[in-house]
Length: 204
Image (cartoon, rainbow, N blue to C red; front, side, top):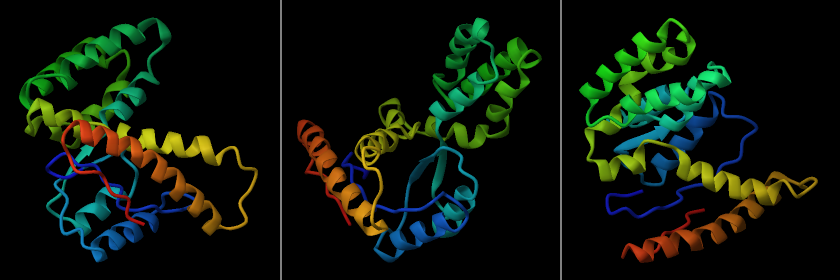
């Protein structure tokens, strides 16, 4: 998403997994194709990516996905306490600013830390990257605090690819993904037009 709120899909990449070789190839491709800098990147904490993004774009701010972190925290909480823990989680990730958020995080630690330490460790260990979005106004925060936008696209692609028994080649899969993405882009274009933004583009 650019500074005007326009959403673009900059590339489509196929890989068996997101290992240490995957992200450098993606970032190198973006760099060579003209992406000079990235203001904020939101990721789900994949190993290797944080180091690579700093190597290619050292000024980029990293925001770890809040939704992924919430899900991770709740995995360590039994069903009987999940609702209460979730409500208390909201106090610090929905705070007005970073300092207030950290104060609420410490209060959460006092309330639940001893009982469910594993649900808290991720927040404490990664608070710097989990709280980047507090540096921006509330209307911008909602665009950068989670990877939901790309996850939603992934879900729509999987709906199409999972119905196929097999692909004759990686190129065949890539073509199907590309055509699916073009259909998805129509929805993005429609959303952009409502906001008065030029249509999104698909770069392949």
